[in-house]
Image (cartoon, rainbow, N blue to C red; front, side):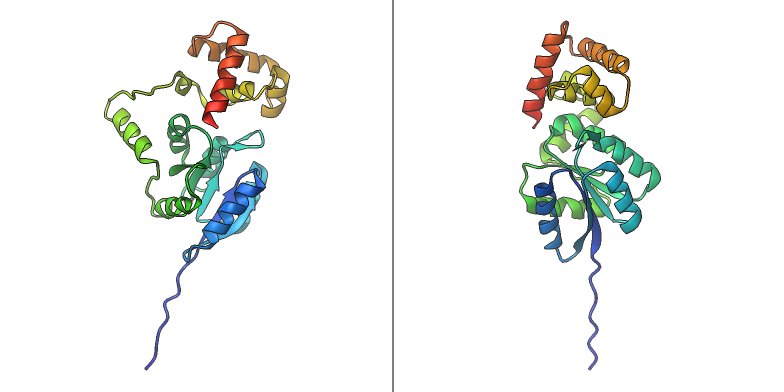
Length: 222
C-alpha cells in the first residue's frame, strides 16, 4: 500500500520592528507554528522594503514607530506596491487611536503588544485568510461608528492627520521643532504650522499646554 503524505505549506512572515528583543520574541513564537515561518526581519523602513523584495512574504508584521520612521507610511507604500500582501500591525500604541488609521492605510489588523505572544499567531492566521483582526472592544467601536453611532471614548487626538499625529507624538517625546524637522525630513516652518493646527484641533492655546498634553498622551498610549 502506498501512503501519500500531504505537505503543509508554511506561509512566510516578515517581522518589522526596531526593538531586537521584540523581534526575537515574535520570531520564536511564529516559527513554532506548523503553518508559519519567519522569512526575514527588519528594523527600519528601507530594510523592510529590501526584505520584501527579496523574500515576498505572505504577511508583514509592522510596528507603527520604527526609530523615528512612520510605520503607517510603510503600510501605505506596501499596499500601493504589493496590493495583495497582507499586513498586521503589532504596536504598544493606543488601539483606539491607531486601529482605524492602519486599516485605512491597508493593514488588515492591529494587535497590542500587551497581548500574549501566542495571540499574534492567531492574528497572523486570521489576516492570512483575508479577515480583519482587532480586539473585540475595538471591533465593536468601529462597527458603531460605521453604523452612525458615536463612540463614548472619542478622543480629540483622533482628529489629527497622520502627519500631525507624528509631530504630536514627537513633541510628547521631548523633541524640539528642529529635531522633529530633521527626523521627518521637513522644514522647521512646516513643523510650526503643524503645531498651530494641532493646538487648534485640541483646543490648546499655549506651547506649554501642548507639550504637557503631548507628553501625557505619549505616556498613556505606551
